[in-house]
Length: 365
Image (tube, rainbow, N blue to C red; front, side, top):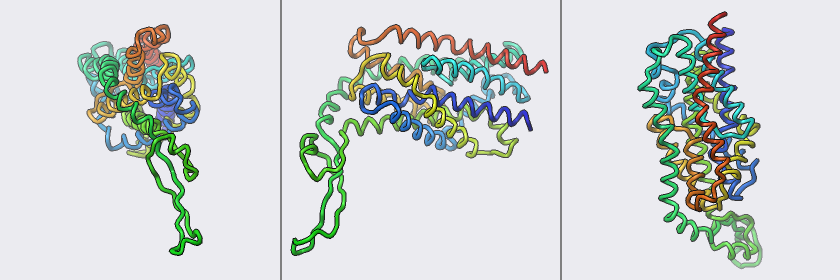
């Protein structure tokens, strides 16, 4: 009972760390393009991430099997020490990266933890290396390249359309109904209208308005965060699902706990990595930010439904880098990109070594 409780708690802390590092991937462009301030953007991303986590219980269940180790191991490794070691190794690296403001992949960290703990438990022969390459290494390597190329390809067309949309806003207009004689007002009701921004600004009956492009950007950020929650939740759930079931927490209930932990981590610890992606990779305007979010949402959402464990970190970072490349190479702050790339390269070995050390420590007791 105590071991199951400890494992379930550790997995929830990993979900918290995932939220702190990964919420930025859906909303950094809102802050970077000036559409929203950082706290508002993070709150928006946290809410939609939790919604994606709840949806994952029915839409991404196949990823649970992939990250429980069943696809990577020659045979299951019994006991909670193995999954605890995987969770601990992944969590340690994610927390370090978040503290330094580096966007890293929880998917990468968990995969490294599975490999490290598996080797420590039963040697290199315990792993299906071809499956690890197919299900983890290939999607993670290809996804940022695809994001860069897709953003670079679609933005020239998308940018022209978005430039026209930027002249319009969605307005909330107060409309007053009068009696048939036209002598007195007896009711007031709001109506939503779309008009040119200058016309909305000049109309005294407009009580609230948001630019049409900004509204689309908020929507794209919501879809990206939803897709991230949809893709990441089952990977984390897989590590603690057996322990949670032992404690009587079954099915969607544990998904809900993981989603809530991801949301809490997003709000409490999401600022540093958001600042990195929003302001330290490249400058962006609202049209560019919206395009990057749209590309990320489409790629991550498609991968989630196809049970491909892509990294939202890699996709979102690739899309943001695509903005800089479209502006010209000098628009990218290459020192920041280099730090992010280095963090990506060492995520697998660092997480693997940490998980291996934790497993050996737990197994020796």
